[in-house]
Each structure stands twice: as C-alpha cells, then as structure tokens.
Image (tube, rainbow, N blue to C red; front, side, top):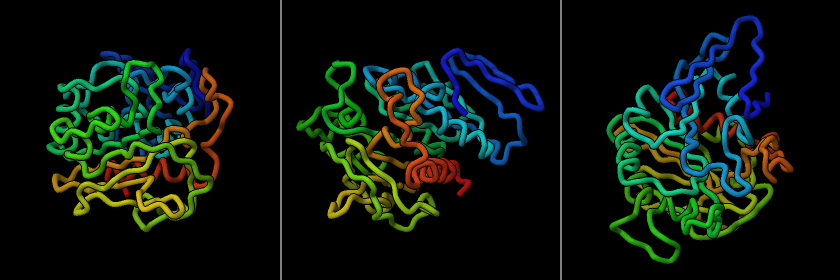
Length: 275
C-alpha cells in the first residue's frame, strides 16, 4: 500500500482513525492489533533533504504498512525528540538523519533505550552523504564527530550502544553472509547500494548479523543491552525504499528484493520484544 503526502487514506470494513497530536501523526490500522505496540519514525532531522525521502508517506510507506499489517501502531514524529514525545513509544526508528541531534535529544534517546528498555533502529548511510550541506551526514551524526575526527568525548552510538559507523561507502548485491539471530530468521540475502559498515565497540552485547563478502565489518548489527533495551542498525537507507518518494529515489524500488522486507519487519519485532 502506498500513502501519498496528502494522507488520503481509504478505509475498508471500518473507519481508519487519524489522530493528530503535538506534531505526531498517528494511524490506527483497521484490524485487531497483534502486538499492540507503537513504532515511531522520526521525520524531524531533514529526512527528506536532497534526494532523500525516508518517511512513512513517501519512500518508506511500504515499510510502515508492513508494520501495520503486523499489528503495530505506526506514528511519525515532526518535533524535536524529548521524553514526552517518546511517551508510549516502543520502537524509535531514525532513518538517515541529515541534521544533528541536540544534546537534549540524545539524552532522551539514550534514556529511552538505557533506562526504559525500549527499542531503537539506527538507519545510516555512506560517508560523505551530507544531503543538505550543513557539514554533517548520518555517519557523523550517529558517531557524534566529523569524518576523520574521532572523539571519545563526543562519541554517541559507539559509547552507548556498542557499535560505531565506519567512514566508508560500500556496495554489494546480494549480501548472503547472514548470521543466525532472531532478526535474520527467514532472511537469506539483503543488499547495500552505497552504504556503511560498523565496528563493534562492545562485543559483550553488540553482534554483527550480516556481512559483505570478504569484509570483517558487519553491515547489520543487533545489540542487546544490559538494561533490557535493544538497538539494531543497518548501514544503508536504500534497501527500504519502495519507489514512491517524490525525489529521485522514486526511480528505485528495493523493498521487494531479496529478503529486505523480511529483515525490516523482523528487526522491528525484535526491537519491540515480539521476536
């Protein structure tokens, strides 16, 4: 199912309720919810800048619909991320941000995972992919420092969640080195179209689960934190593109290829502790 930017939604046997509150758009599926949990896609960090369109009424609409079909309540955030915004959310998805998170936002996200034990999905992209030319791309944003300027003081995901994003640009189709994990159940292959890999910074809880051929750095990681919180990351935003964005990404439909859609839904289920 494709959703356009006007949010024109056709109801079936029952009305689809659309509720707008505090900059968050919420869609309730016309079905008995299997999981009954809320997944939030962030759209407050230039997620449609340049040729990006990583939003639930654009190139990620099939991703959002697949989660609704699995029984999740899917919402979109357009406000700065705070503990209030994250109230009632079970999984937060950060799809290739292109503006930096503030210190306050990082604290809210850290507490969401490390204190509240919730799920976080980090969707990165390749180095030098600054789509709005503000000096920061998603690799730098997630790492907390600029390319080539490692800072243990400023390090974010590497310090908090057990992995950092490598400053690379990799492509492989398909990727078949898939390791055993809940999120790879039924996944036999995925792909990267100009993406990044990761370095595990804490192997006691972060694990690589998908690797490019002859590459010792994982392309997909899963981190089970001592707090009970869970984090997963993939090094490319392109795989979940369904070809319906309003920019040049509309020319590509990666979503049905290989086991990409399976990986997407599995990952969210695992983050929500439903898998």
